[in-house]
Length: 255
Image (cartoon, rainbow, N blue to C red; front, side, top):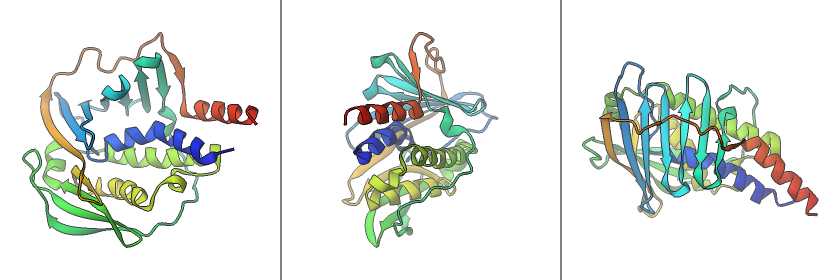
């Protein structure tokens, strides 16, 4: 049984969600009334639109013809994939889980490099990422953007979700995403989670100093799309746990 392929497939379910927030690890405080719109772009020029209203977020997935709806009040997170008329219910990643999981040791750390570039009008500070003493890239973080956006609980929710995902993956497959990640990928994942507590990551570059992702627009008085947080009622529903179990059964029967 090729557990690496299975683990990689399972991790993909969650990794897109996490990567969408590598440079947008935020949540808007409940005192704001207007919706907040944010647009990010990656190295492949893929654009992700994110809308936030109080404790709800809509993350649009143009490449996947769908969107993710997250509701912290109800501990709910669901991906709507129109192409397959499918709802992937990832709410299990929001539920408290106190189990621990073994991880592959990678010596990761960050270095503060001083002022970075201005991004959408905000000063940034560069944090260089290292794994086993090798440079892996940089995150450009803005303290002022963090304050301006009224960032609060979402950063903590992201950290908890990532831990829950690792625990769930280990329980199902006996391994975690660290097992199939490169050292630099592990460093980026850990640093992006840690730096959310310091400031608002607006840009990231890789070890070759090529752009990975950047926030290109922010509008704090945006209009929500129609039915922004609506989940279709006529789509099939599955969960990451069910997908992994089904894949395991198919692999066993294929022997």
